[in-house]
Image (cartoon, rainbow, N blue to C red; front, side, top):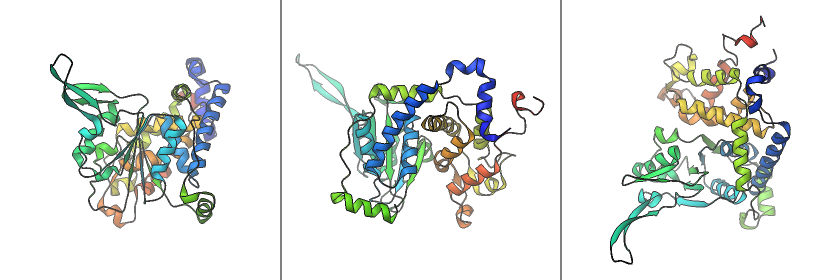
Length: 360
């Protein structure tokens, strides 16, 4: 069977069970058109970064958090600000510095006196109570302050003095960090990195793109943007992503791909056993499934194929692998390691499902 059609065949075989969950073609086209409006708006604001912008939209549709890493002046902050304008979401920007405290992020109780003269502690919400939070230069804050985001990113809530406060939905954390300025920075711990669905590298643009920027934009200012996706449309898009079918053959591929990142597994490739200290968590498999569904919706497909998994694999898995020191000496990077995994792990496992076996 042609590998491109494995996912479609799997969905067809299970049609009686899953047909009520498949997105009809006209709804797929409507959702894709909405996503293209959002993508077109981002392309107006950020020039020459088409692949990056697609991945940003995919992570957004998967309701995931993003970590953008790149040199100064490449438009990381402008990208996030543009996204908030196009979505019309409540937006807050947090500039992370070494003296920033957890209470500066989540808020704190303040003693207030009411009209009757009695005093009580009243919780005042911090800037994290927004739909889209920009954590600018997140690695410049202390680990204690960084940890203030852990509960928010995973649970969509914060707890202060034993009292839990839900965050507004949808809720996204989009963080930036500079990979070369290490003085006065605190590397993000693995537990926090694991909560970012994507880690995306923002690279330099071509000379043609630079020429267009300096020719068409005074002082580098992007064009004015207005919302192109309403809150209701955004919720509809989230529902459509959840309705994208994930065939068993593809979910098995995701599971084997994540399992293969662990060097202590017998089926791990030789490069993983030699150069990887710790592999990806189950959260990585969940992120792969969610972002693959979002990638399929962006492509106008009712089900996930192997190509969608490969499209998001580096962004999902790269920051979740901890390479051995020898890997750096040999020139291995997380992206290169993930690519070797994609080459080594077969799309279809040794034990084919009954509906895909040769006998059928």
